[in-house]
Amino acid sequence: MSFALSTPHASSRLPLLPQALSGGPANGLGFLGFPAAQAAFRAQSYTIRPFRGPQTTLERMAQDALGARGERSMEVRQFTEAMLRGVQPKDYLGEILAIRNVFVQPSPWVKDIALFHYTNDPRHVEMVKDPQRQVEEINAFGSTVVDCDDVSTMAATMALCVGRNVSLIAMGFEPGHLSHVAVTVQEPKSGKWILLDGVAGPREREAARRAKQLLKMKLD
Image 1 (cartoon, one colour):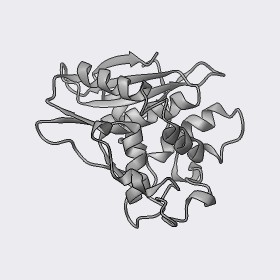
Image 2: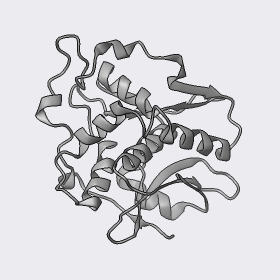
Image 3: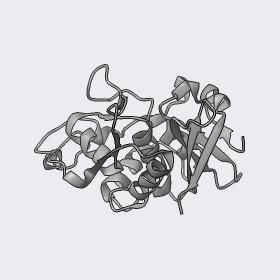
Image 4: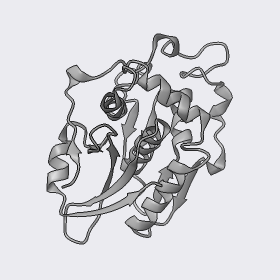
């Protein structure tokens, strides 16, 4: 495969949130310090539709990552900045790994719950939450419930927010059947593409090696 595999261990995790954002709701604000009124989510903040195949899902994810509630969202940019404050300036690999590590962290506010809590989509429906929706849920509840589409859209958007080249990668573990999606991000100093798979977590190396089919979509 033409991308590098990142498998940071727990000891390499960076601080999740700066102290200023980790105190919990107060004065009408949510967990992230945004107005708690954002809990009244807008209907367009997620998409529900019959599953029509991986190409259609990747196109929807790309639209969300590049759109007004993705790369162009100030809330998503602020969330990304908060996640990267512990990284040294111009440590681009460190930024990429910090983004990756966000998705394997526990919520700093809700005990025994992941910040990005994985669950499957409805059985007959493709549901895609845009990045701002995920930030709004974290702000309101201290965590967000996601699947691989949502995690990858968020990871891609965070990487876009800090100026990286990004591609979505759909993976199939059986011939002719794409069932998972991850992200590759280009580290600008080396030019290498780094695989980020927030769902596989420590098993992302194993998951990538098992893939028998790939479908790539570059976010331009």
